[in-house]
Length: 196
Image 1 (tube, rainbow, N blue to C red):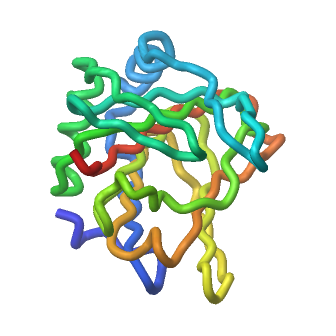
Image 2 (cartoon, rainbow, N blue to C red; image 1 turned 120 degrees about the horizontal axis):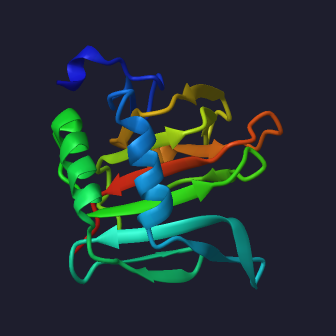
């Protein structure tokens, strides 16, 4: 199915933007359900040897016995909710991949973002598909090549799916730049293939 969608980065990996995959009428109820029913917690990350509590909130859901460590903090996967299973099945039908974990981020406004990073933790299967679903506020998403430093960006619309796979995590960083122009929340679900 993905052959219809071009690779938006020109080398060293694959990033496919599918646009909105969710029905516009169902988007508000999906958003409300995730906002109210996900077990959101403020994220604890280690920066320069200090534990920092972020404004953005996170949750991690996964198959049994799957943990995820990033920024020196270990997360245990919560059991899937019926709603997340439904979304996972929809995304798998688009990407043709299967996922066993999902990291969710809740950005309350554009003043919350994410700096340059790669999803290259050892628990993630090398070169595997990471599918990122955006719900809520439209936000800019940027890529930066680690060697050439070239950058490119894309606007992630409400209900849209972005898939990253291949060698992209080895060669590119990505970020969600902060902006004062966005005053409403965005929920991001990143479905992953983790070592089990």
